[in-house]
Length: 161
Ligand code: FES
Ligand code: FES
Image 1 (cartoon, rainbow, N blue to C red):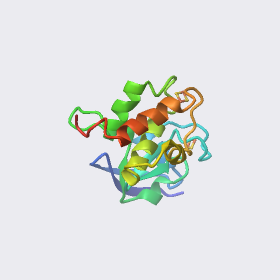
Image 2: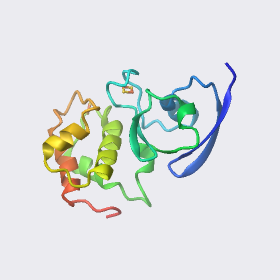
Image 3: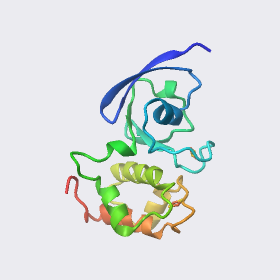
Image 4: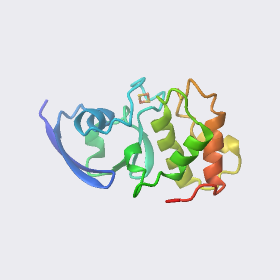
């Protein structure tokens, strides 16, 4: 299969890739561009460890081909920190100890970020749980993750603080 030239923004920087059109987005990010925050787990769109944002929406990087996001704006966990300041979701995850082995964490943070962008004031923790239901965590039991997202929603963490 002939390679294709793709162009997209990753974390506000332009990249060009000349790759096999069968390349998954998560492969393009990890293996071709070095953004290893998005992990590979199930490769069947079930676990969420590969989650990134495409044009602001949470997308599982194993479920789309890189060619499908040609020309789009991609954010990985590496792009959340701005001017040396953690994103509020990252800060809250640290404070609440919302991870153990860490394998799910970058995908979980990206889903939480996309959820809060769309739903800045969730009405209860059930809504938060529904917002991250596409992401599995085998370690934490989810309570600390939900607490962290809830704390951000309640304004405990400010952008750039
Ligand atoms: S690796 Fe993509 S959802 Fe599991
Ligand atoms: S912290 Fe281990 S899978 Fe979530």
